[in-house]
Length: 70
Image (cartoon, rainbow, N blue to C red; front, top):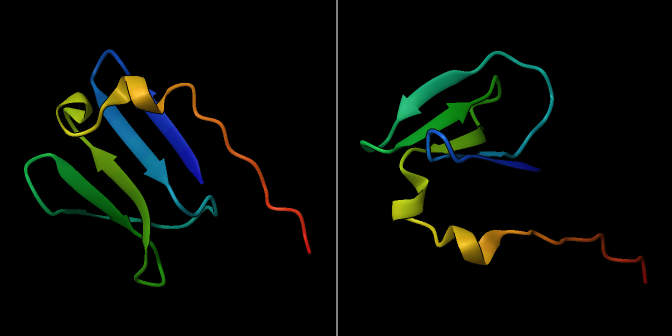
């Protein structure tokens, strides 16, 4: 998963599947656009005016890690 924020346009983009594929954009609200992949699954979410919906200062810096196998 890849998360990008553009502070100039206040746009947040979450990419769930990094494979190269043809996408269809579906606007589900004034500020939310879904990228639908070839298999009909959501592969990306675009949030316009992101700072109105998400507390950005609580998200950055983002830390994550992979769980170790048991």
